[in-house]
Image 1 (tube, rainbow, N blue to C red):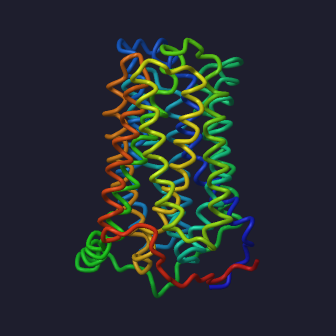
Image 2 (cartoon, one colour):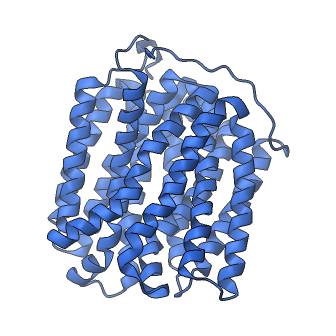
Length: 409
C-alpha cells in the first residue's frame, strides 16, 4: 500500500498519539494532593483512583475501537476517538466533585483507548523485527512525555488551578488530531476489512486467544505493566511520606523515565540484529534480579532516596526492553486480524494491569517494600508465562519475515 507519509514523520506521529495517554496519566501526579484536598477526599490513598479510573476506561474501550477499525478503517475511528478524548479532558477539568472527576476520567480513558488503533496501523505496515524496531522508536519519543509531564503539571500548579492540567491535555490532543487529519492515510487494505457478523468475530477472537505465543506474551505484558502502574500511582506518596521530598518528585520521576527512553532507543538499534527474544528474555531476568535486590534493600531498612532512584531506574529500563518486544511478539501471529488482536490484547493487559497496580498500591505502608515486592512478583509470573510461550526454552531465535508495505524511507 503506497502512502505519502515518510518513516520519521510516521514514528513521530504514532509516538505523539501514544503520548496523549502518557500526558493524561503523568501530568496528574503532582496534583494528587491538591485534588484530594480541594475535592475533600477523606482517604489520601484514594487519590490513586484518578489513575485507576482512567486505566479502567482505557482497558474497556480497547474492545470497541480496535474492532471498529477492522470494519471501518483505521483513520476515521482514530479521529473520532481523539475527538472524544478532547471533550472528556475538558469535562474532567470542570468536574465539581471527586465522583464526577472519576466518572469523566473513566470516559477519558475510554476515549484514549482509540490509540490502540496505532498498534494496528504499525502491524498493517510492518512485521517481525522491523515491527519491533518501529515500536521501540515510537517508545523513545513517547517516553519524553513521562519525563516532562510531571514537571509540566508542577509548572501549571504554580501559575494556575489543577483543572488547567486537563485543559492542557485537551489542547495537546487537539494538535495531534489536526496532524492525523492532515497527514495520516488509511493503512487498512479494503479486502482486509472485517465484516461484523458473529461468526467472523468469534473466529477472530479464537485466533487471538487460542494462539499460545499471543496469549502468553499478552499476559506477561499485563503483569509487568501492572507493576509499572503501581509505581505511577504510588510515586507521589513515596516521595512525600517516605523521603519527605515531594518537591523533587517530578525531577526524580523524569530521571527514572529517562532510563526507559535510553533502553527503548538501544532496543530499536539492536533488535533487528540480536532478535526480540534474546533481548527481552535477558532483560526480564535482569528485571527479576534488580527487583529482588530492591526488596532486600527496602526490607532490611537500607532504602534511601538515591537507592530507590537507582534501583527503580534499572527496573524501568529492563521493563522497557522486555515489554516493547513482548508487545511485538504478541502481535506477530495475529496480523490477519490486527484490530481484534490489538483490542483483545490491549483490553486484557490494561484492565488487568490496572487491577494489579491497584492491588499493589493499596498495600502502601509508608515504605517502598510493597512496590519492590510487587515488581518481583510480576517479574516471576512473567517469566513463567514466557517459559510456557517458548515451551521452556529462552533466547531461541524465531525467523520471521519483516515487511515494509508502503513507506518511502
